[in-house]
Image (cartoon, rainbow, N blue to C red; front, side, top):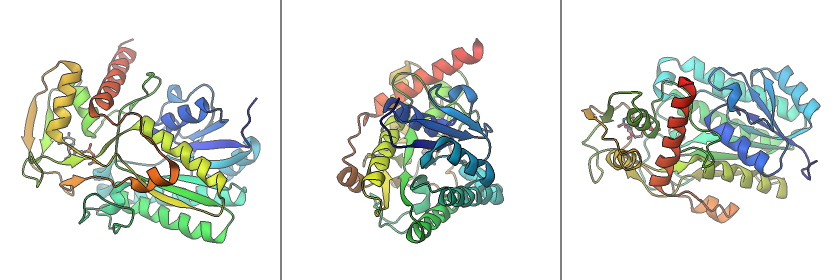
Length: 335
Ligand code: UDP
């Protein structure tokens, strides 16, 4: 039994961030339906308290049926493609999986009477911003198809919310990292490119070294600075967003999700060495195309609006949780 007014659909609930949102929703007593095509997600990553519907977000008929059958009142939309260099090589994949599929999902939501929509947006919509920290008013000028595909979805939501009885919250994630503190989920997709995951793979012997992409940035130690946010704090922000959308159906929201402080690549590698006790081989390499010097979120808006209180704003904690998951994955794959 639940005291909740409806069920929540989580697209991409078998993936990294989506699976953590499922945990947060289920822990809070929400009935959850996961919609995932299991291309990059994993069946085992879907919490047993959730119902899994296997299929595509772009399949409007399937989504429509699921909305009706399960009494879906809100959608949290995480499904999509997330690798920036791949988006440059294969933009149509990103405009398909991210933009066109989001359009289909939003259309199914409107047709099915879904009232609330929460969307995974990204700091990549800002491109290489002129100001730091980045506020929600910083101009959005994406420099790759990934960021553009997400910005286009933000624009669709704004227009749809003005025309139909649906409100939305777009959350612009900075650098999401870490894993469920209870060890129930984490980042599992192979071929990782994100720094903390890559460094933990090196610490657990899955790769030989870590490349440092650029040492001549305008930062204190010359390496790129990012605002790393714990995935569990991010999931918590989604629950607060859901409460806010329900409380005021006339209001929509767009917020940055970060902690408002940054760490360099070298500081991250130091933290991984502290957590693991392993010395990581570091190789200096040229800059990666399109990487800004520093990307730090101004988060005053979400703190003020939702009363968001991060519980894991600590690099060592983020790294330790990610490392624990990496070791768990190693045991899982060995077993
Ligand atoms: N980075 C690095 N080596 C890696 C992966 C990332 O030096 O193997 C750097 C990257 O240039 C950036 C920071 O680490 O300064 C974070 O990169 P990541 O790919 O994790 O996230 P992004 O900020 O690109 O979304």
